[in-house]
Amino acid sequence: MHAALVQRVTRDATPTNLAKRLAWTAGNALMEVWPEIERDTDLAVALRANTTALHATTDSHLWNSAPDLGGHPVLFHAGRSLGHAGQLAQAIAYFEHLHTTAARYLGSEHPDLLATRGNLAYWRSKAGGTASSINDASTAT
Image 1: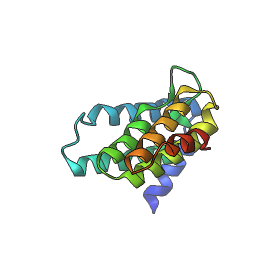
Image 2 (image 1 turned 90 degrees about the vertical axis):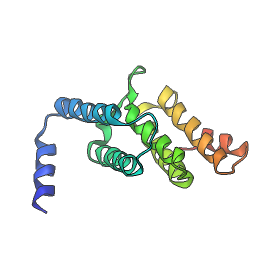
Image 3 (image 1 turned 135 degrees about the vertical axis):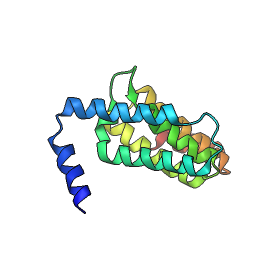
């Protein structure tokens, strides 16, 4: 319990510009150690869990509305990792949540919001969806 309190106080006391840099640095570190081909299931699970924790604790710091930045690549990588691991329902739920978050921070025409729609349609189709998966993804909010 004390560790969680110390973490919260530290996050709250960190200036926004530094917190954003730290969040992106942590995301970069996750991407650096994430293997291109996931052979170690435990490692993949740990990397996805760390990405989820990073996103949950830093939220808006992993999003930038600039067209060349958008959402940190690790956010998208974690969702694709779920799908490639055969966890299609989880990948769909992940990208539904990511789409909602991207819409909140990026706006309706940002390339990363469109990328979340594409990923959502892709994993829905892999799970047995049809062309309606694409329509559902394009109207998801």
